[in-house]
Picture 1 (spheres, rainbow, N blue to C red):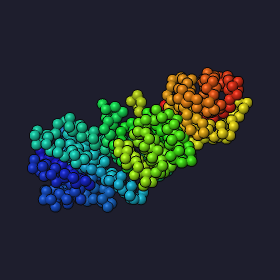
Picture 2 (spheres, helix red, strand yellow):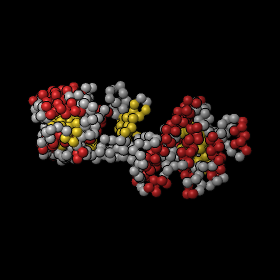
Picture 3 (cartoon, rainbow, N blue to C red):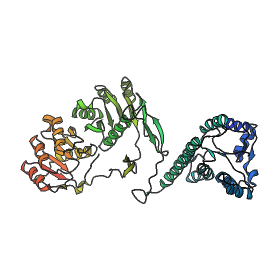
Picture 4 (tube, one colour):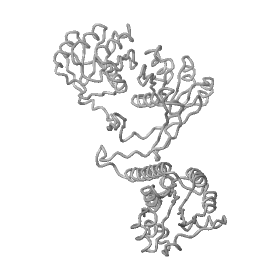
Length: 504
């Protein structure tokens, strides 16, 4: 039986060699108009598809492969009934389909909505899906990288093994799924979503940074990005970014963006270990570093203001993995160039993700980001003594920082500078103890922020014994009255925000 291969490609990489190889093995080539012209110009025998079907391309090329002879030829199974029905309509089986899709992503990036919609491939997707569905008989090639594998199998074995055809089919379905998800993502972007959580979760992203490994050397890792988002940073110098660098970079940058400029935040293992606001970036960094200089070693620092020469000199005082800022002055870059291993990154203001997604138990946890502005008018003073003006300033700062610390989270602050942070503890009172241990004598006169309510008055009592004067927390415990009574007993001020800010 004569064997037919159908070609309809926009990317002609490897096309001529593949087609020549098939012709050399006795195959006949069918092709859509543009592909047929390219093959004919290369001296390769080819039958234009419209001659084969007797139906010309119409609607400016929108319809060229959507024809019963084409899809019946692809979908027919090797049974007597299917062969007879195919013959009755004058059709012949198609044994190989090589298609790549219109470049929708590029059209959507550069043009109007009308241009992007015109670049949505219909026939190509239908061809790939039909061939992939019938992979038991049909070979489907959805990318030029498939051509050498198929040609080698045909030359060596006279047929493409079923296992390879199955893998090629899976690749084709993966491509069409990604393609459709990308289109849906683009069209959804035209309007605000009607619901905060989608009925169906579609992920369309491609790897943009190949990482040496994941969290540990035995784990593979890569950074994937939505095709309609630009890389939100530019690396000026230093070693390639690692998986853990990117996790910490995101944590540091989000925390810095949550503070008034100029501010600096130092992150270690996805937790702030120091944060401060000051009159200059250099002073903000030195104060953030003083919050916990031991933990800051080998960390990541993010600024929300331009890094100048004075700041660059201060940064040379400690080993850091990454320095991130929205801008750098030329003289600052000259200083930082001496830290050759340190990654120096210019951050762009990224689009805040609509959803936060985490894989768990073979599925996904999806939530909206915790990005709402605090309604400070709803904060409630619950103790007899209200916070003084200076305490309020520090409480607002500490509350901003504690939102970025892993739960259970406690932040001690004074003068808009963290002096002690307790992170990721199973017991809230232990988080208080760790923050106080980090602060030492600096706990005296400091304020405290807690990301969730105090279940018992013990955390307040430990803080009071260390000299903490004011507390901000969500409230909502069944023992709130006992917690408030303890604060009043020690002359502390306490305010409830009414909103929890867990970060697991």
